[in-house]
Amino acid sequence: MTAATVPVLDLATTSAGELTQALVDWSCVMVSGHGIPGDLQQEMADVSAEFFDLPEQEKDKVRSPGEGLWQGWVPIYRGDPEFVEPGVVPDLTEWFQGHDFESFPLWPERPARMRSVYLAFFQACRALSTRVVDMIATGLDMPREDVPAWTERPFCGIAANNYPARNEAPLPGQVRFSPHTDEDGITMVMARKDPGGLQIRRPHSPEDDWLPVVLPPDAVFIQVGDLMARWTNRVIHANEHRVVYPPDAGATIPRRQSVIFFLDPARDATVTPAPNCVARSGEALPPLHVGEYVLNSQKVYSSGDEQALLGDIED
Image (cartoon, rainbow, N blue to C red; front, side, top):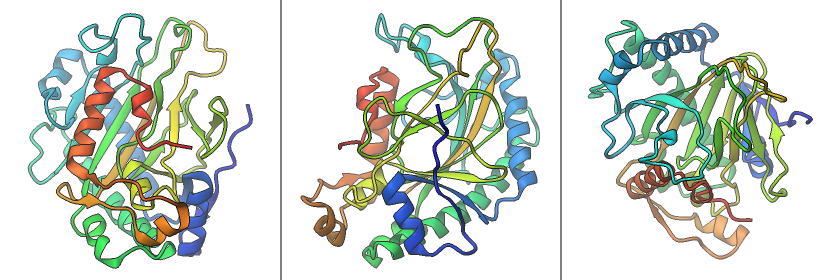
C-alpha cells in the first residue's frame, strides 16, 4: 500500500489560499514551520509513555469519571462487555485527556513533570491552532464575527493515545482505532515513529480506499473535524481516519503512541454554515451547538457504534 501524498506545507511561506485548498482537496495537511519545538514534542512523548507504563492501579487514581466530557485516564474500555455489544471486535486503545487546564483536577502524581510538560505543549499548540483557523477564515472569506469563538474563546485540550504492545495477533478485522471523524474543529497530531499507524480516506473516495500516512520528522499533521466541516458547509470535509496494526502483524506487536491537540469553538457557541460556503457547496446544513454535539459524539463512541462515529461524513 503506497503512502498518501498528503500535502506538506511550510507555514513560513504558505498563503491562506494554499492551505485552504489543500484542506479542500485532502481534509488534512502536514505542516512544517509550525513553531512547536522538537525537544518539546519529544518531552511530550516521553512523559506520556512514562505515565502509560505505570501499573494500572496507579493510573486508576486519575481515571475518567465516566460522565460528561472525557478527562483523565481512559482505560481500554471498549473491550468491556459493559460498553461493547456482543460480537463487536474492540479497539485496543487507552488514553489520557485533559482540557480547561486552569482548573484541571486529574493530574497524576507520577510522572511529577507531566503537568508542566503538558502545559508548555498546550500553549505551543494553542498558538498554532489560532494561526491555522485565521488562515482558513481568510482563505474562505468566513464571517469575521464568527472567528472569535474559534480564536479568542476556544475550548482546547490534549489527548495522548497509547496502543499497547501485544503478544498475540489481532482478531480478524481488528484495528487499533476504528474509522471515525473527529468531533472537533481541528485536531493536530504528532506521533512517534512506531510501526503500524494512521490511515486516511480522502473526500469522495471509495469506502475501502485507505491510504497510510507517514509523518516527516517534526511535522504536525492537521485534520479537519466535524465542527469545521459544518462551518464550511463541507467545502472542507471532516477527515475520515483510522489507526491500524503493522502490516502482516504476527504474535508480537510493538506499542504505538500519538499526541493530539484538539480545538473547538467556545462550548456555548453554535456553528452555523457560512453563507459564502453554502453558496459554493449547496443546501445549508443545520447548525450545531458545540457543547451538545461534542458530548453526544463521545457518548456514541462509548457505545461502540463505528458507523455513527463518522459524524460529519457524507459524500
